[in-house]
Every structure is written in C-alpha cells, then in structure tokens.
Amino acid sequence: GDSVTQMEGPVTLSEEAFLTINCTYTATGYPSLFWYVQYPGEGLQLLLKATKADDKGSNKGFEATYRKETTSFHLEKGSVQVSDSAVYFCALKTGANNLFFGTGTRLTVIP
Amino acid sequence: DGGITQSPKYLFRKEGQNVTLSCEQNLNHDAMYWYRQDPGQGLRLIYYSQIVNDFQKGDIAEGYSVSREKKESFPLTVTSAQKNPTAFYLCASTPTGGARTEAFFGQGTRLTVV
Image 1 (cartoon, chains in turn yellow, blue):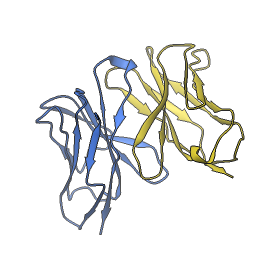
Image 2: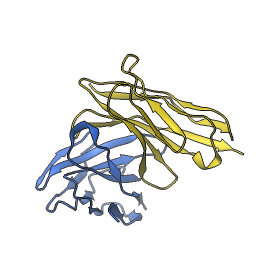
Image 3: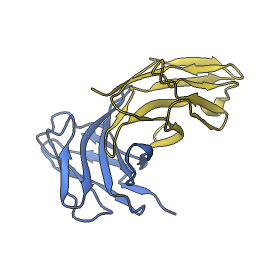
C-alpha cells in the first residue's frame, strides 16, 4: 500500500548549519508530495509541495525535489535558524482522500 | 479569514465521560478529517468524510464517533469506550481536486483524562 518513510529524529543543529531530512515513499499511481511543519502546541502548516516528478517545491528557504527515480522528496535548507525548530512531516496524496503522513522529524536549532 | 477552527484548545475528561470536540471550516471544502497525535508520534487517521451525511472509518476509529450534518462542521465524540483518549487531536479539510490539493489543519485540541 501507499506509505511514507521519514528520517527519524530528533535532529539537533547549530544555527546556520545545513539541514537535510530524508523522505522516501511508496505509491501506486502519481502522488503529490508535501512537507508540513508543526510548531509546539499548534496544528500542521503546509511548508511546500510538488505535484509531479522533477518539480521543486520551495518556501522560506526550504526546498524539496520530487524524485521519481529514487521515490524521494528530501527536505533541505542551506542555513537553519532557531525559529526553524519544529516537527516536520512528509506526506503524500494519491487521490482525493488518500493522504499519508510520515512519523515526523523533530528539529532543534541551537544558537 | 478562511480557515479551520477547533474548540476547545484544551479539554479535560473524567473517566467514563463522553466528550465532543468541535471542528468548523469556512473554506467550502468537501472533505474533512480527524487525526490523533500522540507524543513523539505521527498522525493516525480516526475518521474522514467526503461529503455531507457520509463518513468513513480510518485506522483507529474504535471508541470514537462523528457526524457530518453540515458541510462546514465535523464534530468528533470521544466515547467512554476509548480507553486511552489522552492525545492531541487535529482536524483537517481538503478541497476537491484529487491528489494535487493540500490539507488544511486546525490548531488542535489537547484532550486529557483526569
């Protein structure tokens, strides 16, 4: 069945370090891929998305490229800030209501 | 502003009580969802509804019930049959548009059994 496998955390980085959070997926058909971010005590917010192979989603310095050949959608940011500390979820959607989430990766950025 | 409103933000339940969590959206979305999140874990689907007066069980529906009498409202009842209800509950909605449309989330309700 459809699923998302996400890099387990927690991840702790110093400010201005490079971030990569790995995400791979299994899906039939042609899924769309998403990264969501959750700040403490809040709901999830869409960070970026890509709807077809080779698309690059980007927002707030974060990027992820939809790689069909490796079934991956890794999240990257060149220079993290303390304010990026949150939990990040990779997700895929294969139809109108088939939405699958990874287990989340907690990122802590220290000054 | 359009969005999803969950209430209350914090809820306390006594043993054996039923409680209802509210979820209202003014985004005119057809589909609505309820997820449960436990500490350090991902999201697990409880129920979802694609259209008014219709809903489907998700992966962990036991001990929960829902209704969808209006397009904008999808309340979740946590019944006394749910033995471990302490968790963070998230409501979401999506527009029509198949796989390309993202989900929008409320701010969540934290339920604690006392």
